[in-house]
Image (cartoon, rainbow, N blue to C red; front, side, top):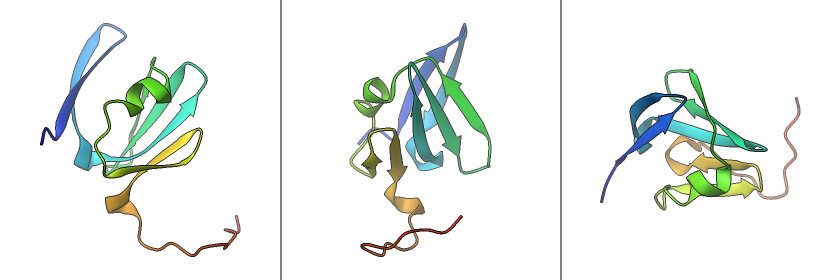
Length: 83
């Protein structure tokens, strides 16, 4: 299985590894790609379009959020997180 993909955006190209992506957050025509090193890349692609590239290790938890299963520590059904 291919574990990398090339993100070409804003005149630059970046090779990304699925294992480094913590989550993706859709923001209209852009997607914020949060990496395990704490950095964020903003891509001028929709989450739907990037979602087609994602491997099965990602789960959509909301229409705007996809999370890498490898970074989920705990899931409690019906729980509401306090902020």
